[in-house]
Length: 230
Image 1 (cartoon, rainbow, N blue to C red):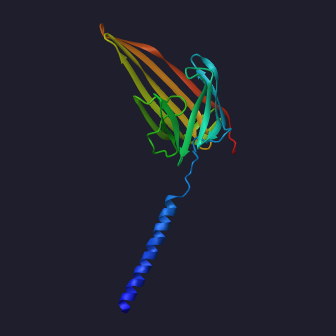
Image 2 (cartoon, rainbow, N blue to C red; image 1 turned 180 degrees about the vertical axis):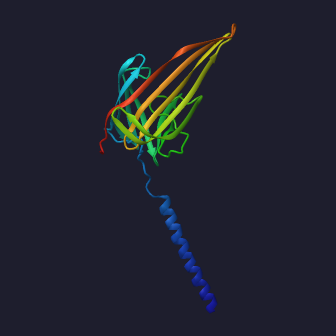
Image 3 (tube, rainbow, N blue to C red; image 1 turned 60 degrees about the vertical axis):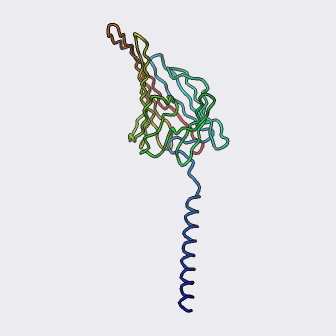
């Protein structure tokens, strides 16, 4: 009888340990997520201004976080010069566990696509602001250390890059273009530098003639920025 009581007590003790362990596991699984991106600070009012240099002239670009709702931020991009020039282009962004995603749409379908991860080992990252075509594109991210832009020095920077080759062949002729994009981000600052290069070419199948048609390059460099929490 005494042995039976002891066994019951031991079983109760082990059950108590198991209950505590399960409670700790549940608490660990439900701890609040970090929803702030280190490399692109998101807060309404954050604003970045860039000098733009292109073969078509010089100008500026402005990027600003303009609103927040339903856990997502709206970012306005306005550029007045170069091949990346666009007016009032609105991006929808959300961040979970420091992984930044962009709302995309095509053929009435919408989905969130990862564009920036603060984990520098994540090589599935896509460029955010300037080049968001998915098909035929290779993406990568890697640390690049120190970046100097104008009179400012930024450390522990992360580079996002992509390469896209587009080819179009008809019956007797063909052509295409290759685009390279790099975007450099500094922790606690955001996007500090952008460079986009596109090179295009053509083929003549009758005489097997290759024509190097040319290229263009756009560069953005951070001129000024203001963050509401700094």
